[in-house]
Amino acid sequence: MHFRQNVPLVDGERRIMVCFVGSPDDPGYDDAVEHATEAILAANREAGWKKKEKRHKRGDFPAVACGISFGKGQPEPMQLGGERQEMMKNLLAMDSFRRIAGFQSAALRTWFPRCYEEARRRKAQLLELRPNLRLNFDNSVYLCTTINFGPSTWTHIHTDSKNDPSLPCAITSGGKYNWKLGGHLILWDFNVIFEFPPGTTILLSSAILRHSNIPVAKGETRISVTQYTAGSIHRWLQYGGRTEEEFEKADPEAYLKEMSEHRAGRWMESLARYSTFEELRSSA
Image 1 (cartoon, helix red, strand yellow):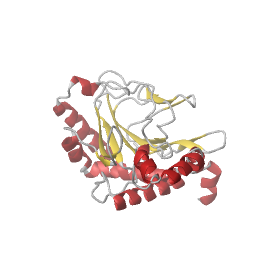
Image 2 (image 1 turned 90 degrees about the horizontal axis):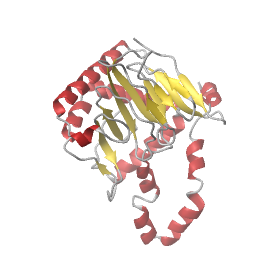
Image 3 (image 1 turned 90 degrees about the vertical axis):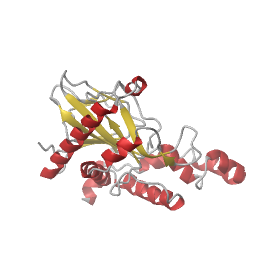
Image 4 (image 1 turned 180 degrees about the horizontal axis):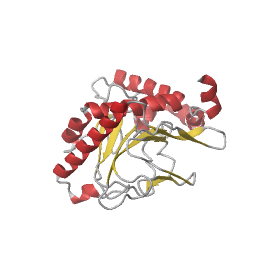
């Protein structure tokens, strides 16, 4: 079933901060989401998860990230590692996941065009500096993907503080559940609850907006696929392809100027990339 109605949420300045974008007008897309969901559930059954893998701050279910990240002591942006990466690579290599990723990226371009262009620019800049890095998908501006394996995924109230706040992440839901009764997305800062049918996508800045899910019923299944980019990669690029410590050591004068003149205004620069509904309507 297709859900093609778009539902944007705006802030006090009429900037679009969240958008429920449904699913594309493409019968094959539903099949792709169903195929990806079945592959995720099959991988979940075969994974033999350790206890620590099934409980984290977002909820009590296995979740694995794959792609390019930067943090946790890494000296520069790098490929994520770990024993689950082979499983992730096998899943993301399937055409069904590529179709989901491509739709998520296209939806970002439609509803957040300036955010999309900045993400595209940064991706190109990163690959120019580190051509050895591998993208999950060639049809997406995002650098990292997380799969929530369920089989009954629902999240606690949280923000994803390490994600880039200037780039809305994309979340696509899958599974077999009654979406009128469960699986809803709660946006606490907007006091809004979205119905979240299987196969639909929501774009939101998960780094700054508190969100969670309503559980699905016993015996139902729900998974999700999320794309995003780590905020620390933006800073690494801003500092000339180096860490803040390396930047300060190599060029103290430029470092002080960056901290005093530019850093304070970066939040407003990020907000300026969010379009108003009127801007999008006039450009259309």
